[in-house]
Image 1 (cartoon, helix red, strand yellow):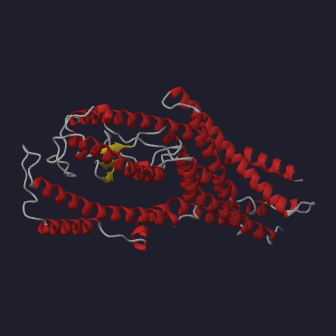
Image 2: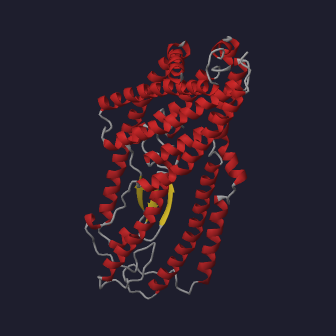
Length: 464
């Protein structure tokens, strides 16, 4: 009986005008979005290549002075990845350039590249965005009158005049909706992969296909939750227009209201100090350190590395660095916690769950940023040790380590290819799984709760 009901429902959806219009809109938009993302990826790669060449030239110029290599600020700009076509993980809204020296990881910023910042898009037309916005709406549009519409048409009373269980009927409805819309997503993804192959902009290899399979898995879960929301709305009313209003309200809240209220929630629920306040505290502590420093701590003699007061200067500069780094690192940790806690507020939003699971599947977004941030601190310690090892071999150096200047450490040249350069390591499978786990469990729990409510409502639904 279930198979017969499922085939009937699937045929009804596939032959329906709403589905056909949705298909005609979704697939071209999906492919157009892929072409748009590929074009953006190409431009980003060109900009990244120029910046990388400039950084290489800068490093070569520094190689004539070992201390200059250690104290000069270096940058690590995140290279563009092929997965940006699938989901950009909102990386355009996250810091994408880390700054460091051998002595510290000094901060992060957003690198604009060569693009006009006034033309910067808030959200690209990648697969995830199109599916979470467009296909979610189509899912509700297909499901809102699954029950209430058939009651108005008196189809329900006819169906249940036969020996049909309500559970089988409801599950057949659910699988019919999910199957029809997942097929739409599959067609869109297939067409997009073909477009990507023809463009030759990304390499369709095992890693990329693994990302696609992971994305399809999260998409199936997301479509399932949205389908249950539509079915539940349909069981909450005996009139299809009321069911449609419920679906539209839910979609507006999930897609528009919550994402655009996150900044307000972050500042009100998880406040952190103002950056200007932190800078004022850093400056005050720096003034105290300078005021209490021994006399001559700012004296210098560029022609004599062994000038005695260079040791006082190095100690004072080190104290200033430690004070700044301590306060800045504490402030950065507060920023990270505020961001992470704000995300947790949306853990029961299907769109937020879908977004975070894709981030974990692809190893991008905040997961990528935080991993690089932590890995760079490990690299910085090894970079400093490399510098100290070479400095210890130089008899012309007094070995007074000044984190900002080259007055009292080795000025010997060093081979460019011997200079440590930070490189990114992709997130391991265990790290991705840890990132996904909470959101996956939340989505499964939400799906189960909504399905149970839908089933209870339908058991009490008057089909007459």
